[in-house]
Image 1 (cartoon, rainbow, N blue to C red):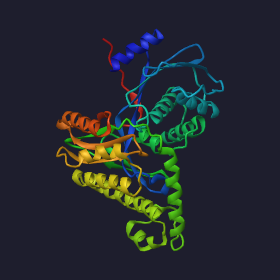
Image 2: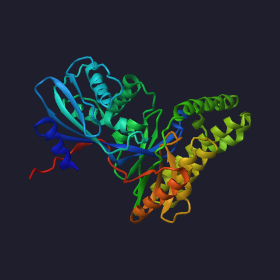
Image 3: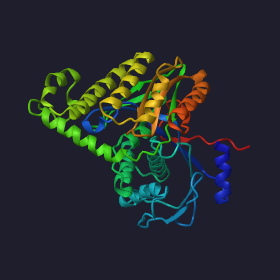
Length: 389
């Protein structure tokens, strides 16, 4: 693939590239819908991601081309970068805008992007593009940003330049990811712990339901409001700022304060899920994958029945996995109402798993999922160049 990208760059720009950068996508292994409740998430970088090939030019412009999209763009160095509709290149243009805003000196570049992350699957293709661009510019032009500052810069692009209100987990995990490690991250303080996550004979299967996530945003806001209602009720007796400031034991002693059953269900998921993240970290550290898998199933059950953000498509995938001897854990990942599920599947059984889950899902849902395999990979970086023949 790298050789093909080198050839693509040569074809597009009529010269050879000089550097190749890579930023992964990410999945959240466990800890869903608790980031805005002061809790812990456990994302990891995957081995799919975004490649960026670059070479300088003397024309004083940034040129953007992608193997994945037909739209291209050209932006003058130092200009105020106005967005042009909702095209993919707005993400890197937003990064350049932030560099300009901070007074960083940049020079012309020819840039070619290629991503093998499924678009709109919830695996953070946008964060991957933002972070790989920010990392490359920082490296090429001695920008002086720390990796954490690049993460915050990329989040600014998403929130302010693009206008999508999302948290920092995506940018953080694609920047700080480490091979065979999950990141137990507090999204509020950005304190994190790298957790050993050697999957051994298993790999991460990513099953894209291929259902558009139209409900996710409105239901997301609804869940935030319900959690705020639960917090207000608990504050009658507890001095807390977030639901995740207490554990399940403390919650059970005070949950009588929450009189609305739906609100109680939401809060129960949040508090118990936060505890599950801590138990999952211990299971991974102790290399007890079966226990980690059990916690994945418990997480999904809670998201489906208490938090009600799953749906037929995601439940169908997990229901297929439960009795399968080649799978030790599965759950939805991301906001829900579509998007992806993940499963821990034996490496030597992946092809069989992929065929069987596709057949089962298609029969139950009416259209096919997309199934991918991944390991836990490294975060953003400069790739060594291939030797030329």
